Structures are given as structure tokens and as C-alpha cells.
Length: 336
Image (cartoon, rainbow, N blue to C red):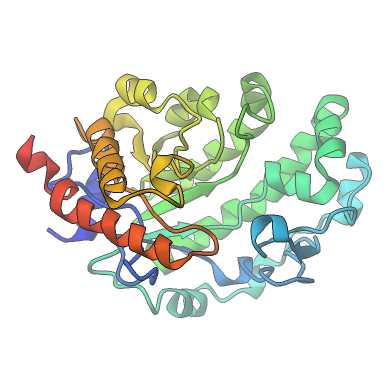
């Protein structure tokens, strides 16, 4: 069995032969052959530099607060009245893209035998409206003009859905990513009731395309977003990353088991990440992490020791952690 086959068992709610890793970072910080390789369709990732615009015309700018990554340029929103969105927001011409050529280019570096290929789009429903209008105006629009918000979400979704339909037979992914952040570290941005009214129908149509093609759906959602989990299960999501620790991960695992695999759950702000963390402490935290989430399956190891701007100590910590995974975690199911 390959790493690819093993982690796909987790995404499908089955027991893996060994404890898989989700993603993969070498002990020197390099990314080599990974159990999973998630890619974005290349025409959707062209706004990675300061001054770039996304497919809908939103300008992006590098920000020190996110270590140079790009965010929608503050104060330069393209839509100031949700009722005028039809005059401003234009979906790209899907027929202008050659999906066969894009797939050949975008997947050329992927080891399709050993690494499960995840297909991601620049998903643009909730975060798209925020990028178009800014948080304050967008959230006000959800309350004051709900039908216009729904119409815009459905319009954006029509492009994303058609893109996914054309990409699946050309990219031939092993799983599909549903990528959207709908929560802060403390609470969701919108209530579960609003989530079900506005966003869930869009996500369901998107997930149905993947599920009807026999592909599992892995959902990326940061922050304390556990309020939405029943809805994820309902639309067919079977794995969640990064599953951050501000959620009740122990309770979630107990409740859902292998129905919702936790691909993450590592405390990136915990004691193992302190600058003065000893090797003994780091290894103990990794074992504790594995012992907490491995029982019963439904878990992919995703601990990491690197920060946005890694130091030599970070690389050392990463080496300890990977060594602990290889010697303690990988064969956990054989030993417990």
C-alpha cells in the first residue's frame, strides 16, 4: 500500500494501515514527496504578489501582519452597493481556459503514485463578498439585502461549479478541497442559521459535484468553526483541516469518529512551539498529540515545528517531531 492509498482510506472513513501524515515538510523545511499534494488551478492563483488582482478585479497587497502574504487591499473595495453587483462583478469566461493544458502543467510535479492529489479552487463565496466590499459593508448586506447576497453567491458559485466540473476529468484528482474561512479564533463570523440560509446551499452544490464523481471532500476552515460541523457532515465533507485547537477537538472526535477525519489538531501555539522548548518536551507533546487523536482512526498527523520565518531552532524542532512521528506515531496502530 502506498502513502496515497493509505491516506485516502482516512478521507473515506476507513481505517488506515498506518497513521498517515497530512501534507509533508522535510526536516530541513523543504517539501518533497508528500502523502498529499493539494494544488490550485493555476489561473486561480495569479494574485500572489503585491499589486496583483484576482479574477474578479480585487486588488491584493502584501501585508507584514501575515508575513508578506497578500490580502485584499484595504480601502480599495470594488463594490460599495450590493444591489449594483451585476454592474461590477463579472465571472471570467470559462471557455477561454484550456483545461487539458492547464492540468498537464499544474500536475507535472506531482508523484501520482505515492501522493494523493487534492484539487482546490480559489473558492470565493463568503470570502469573495468580503473581498469585494470589506467586512463591515458585506455583513450589513447579509442583513439588509439578503436576496441580493444570495443572488451574488449563486452567480459566483456558477463559475466555481463549472470550473470544478471541467477540472475533475482533466486533473483527475483523488480528493477535492472545499476552502473557505468563516470563523475567527473565538467565534464564527455568522450564525449557524445564516450559514445554512446563505452558504450551505452553495457548498452543497460544489460538494455534490465531487461526491458524484466518487471523490471525498476535505474542508479547510480555520478558527473556532465547530458550530458548522453538522452542516459539513450533511453536505458530505469527510475530513477537516487544520482543525485548530480552539475547537473542542476531543469532543468532536468522540462524537463523529471516522465520519469527520481530523487532519490537523496540532497546537501551533502550545508549549512545544516555545523558543526555549527542549527536545524532551517537544517529543512528549508529539506523543501526547498522537495518543489523543489516533485511537479509532479518523486522524492524519499534521504536527509541524516551523513558523512563518523559521529559525535554526525551528528546523531542529521539526527534525525532532518528524523523528517522533516515524518512530512512535507511524506504526501506532500496530502497537496499541
